[in-house]
Length: 537
Image (tube, rainbow, N blue to C red; front, side, top):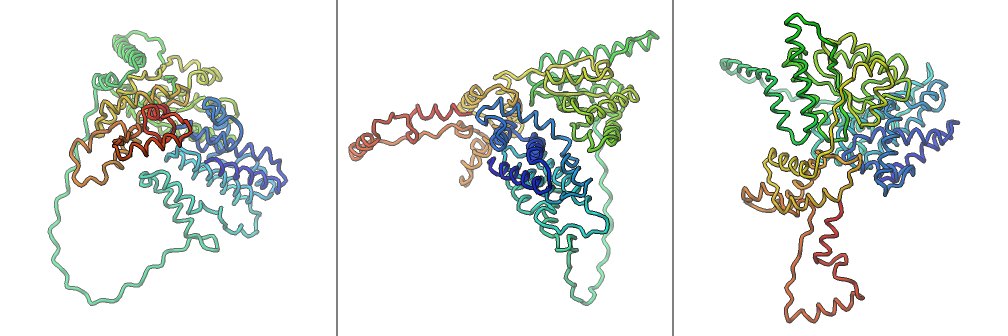
């Protein structure tokens, strides 16, 4: 629901007014911060529509308009996921009422749990952004003054943490840091400190006789490391990916050029400067990260990289809250990636402000300093990536190869569905595939379309429905456990009622009471009703 975001933005404006700050400027901060926190939602368009309804910046019924406004706002607010907002920074510097304003910002951040599409990454963003705003308020306390009393906003409230965990469903095991924050929220005392646990004293017992110590078991031998894959094996894995014909061709061409370059060098011949850095352009879910990981392995197999590992980052992991700190942060990320591939997702977010420009300048320097042992792959939507590469001459001279990841066709998305299901020991029955194709055909191919993620999301929903359908079966057969039916993909269950002599008259009376309503009206179980429901993506 977007009501929570609307209320949080209203409260933020009031907090700004009380601190002598322009309420509209504060509201703008809250709007972009919420988008930046929720932009990792899956599917993104659900969060974008809820965000649009809560902010009033776009028509929530218009998916394209909502997503466009949402992405633009997120780009402007990403830096605040790890740093105080501009208004909060000014209040902190002037010793203004930063505590109340920071608390209102935390409310805005926490309201993003209700926008839809909650993922572990969104939850991480919530935790990081809330900590950044709250920490800035604490550091604004004047020297010698008592720290502000902890209230509802001093730590993430335990009910908010619980709501996030409930929304994430079985993923709470992957969020130990979030659980720790929940425990801290419940354990903060009146002084603001976390009380140490009180352990009960163990009763004194007579000493037991010492048992003989069993002989130590020999330590288990460590498993042998897997031998490194050859270039041919990695190319075979690349070829096994569904679709991506143009991508496979470009990667094979790169491999051929690098192999010939090595042979020419061994023969004592000069080589032209061939850049190994790549630009990946395409919509979400088209396999960019997967191929980037394979490129690292291929470069390692060609002995161009020592490790071939992949370090995946976005703007928030490159940009700091203040000028001068960004260069250090970006250099540290590059250092982690030396010997492998640095994959920068949504790299176009580094355009348009001085913080992003500082990150790009540092990146160019690191690429030059480590030109023999660092490969950088930047990824994003096609048009914004053109502007990203053009912003700095050092980028345009190093990123000469662009790999375009086209959207999957309907048949390719269906093939991905079957592969994902088979990998998880499920079978998609023919009726289920027909329903999936109908839903796929009715889904607009906007920039919010998830491609491979679309298939994964619907498969996970189908697995959940199948579990509800067979949970009460005492001894299900293997087929019942494996098969995903049409109903599991959202097809309505048809209910057939036999009309006998005893109820024919009653059925006729019900039809007369319907005031001429057609048989396909909501509530009837006719084919017309079924097709209407299947038309909803």
